[in-house]
Image 1 (cartoon, rainbow over the protein chains, first blue to last red):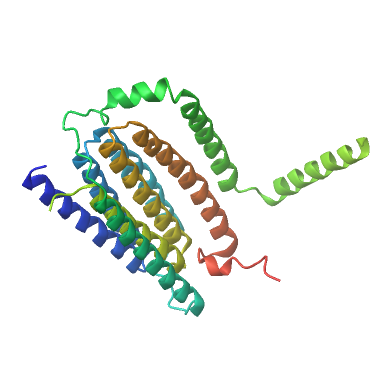
Image 2: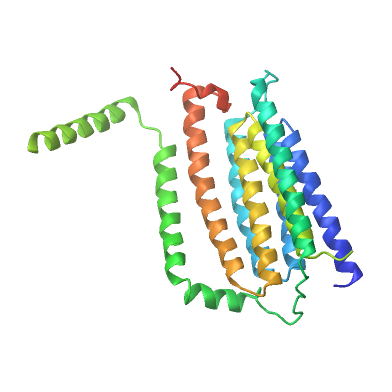
Length: 190
Length: 101
């Protein structure tokens, strides 16, 4: 890798970490969401330096596009204000701090252990990241998991519609009555 | 200093730590949700880095699966938040204590 891509990597890595800290720091959920979009875009650029253009584009489309638009839409819909400054249980702060220190120590250990192993050189002609190879693997070797993911997405669509539906009181009672009748019939049959 | 596998893993670990601490510190359900998304992204970065350094396409397929699960999670999770907000007029997780006692 030449100087420019090294500099770009550290630029985007710093940007990602700054945006992540700002996401946790801000009380207003909208500012958090915008910071998170910054993290996603920085990570997409890092994927490009890792020679994975397909994943970079999907990252922008799915995360920065679809998911964050949904989150911002819900923030606007619920008209959320800043978090009130009531104190949370104190042991939770201790727990969070301890968890952070443990995870950071693990990260340092992993970095130390990996940097001690002999460095595997990257093959500059490797084409694992292009769309052709990913598509070929997806529709031959990984056909079943891809189909399962499709079914799972369908279930998520149906589930979110059911969850977000608001039943009027008579309709709700009707549903409960039907369910009660069904249960009674089943019990009567046994 | 050129970025190598250890650098990418370090960046991923830092992002995961920030996300994990955020889940504990945030009181807002949407904030916690966004921190979980950040943790998923940190894991995706390790997958892509390993996929690059071992010249293996399977890591990127896993990233694709993780993204699909994240999209499904977003749809269902936000549906739950809307239903919760309707009942409580708030999205603060500390108010979700009806099952206590």
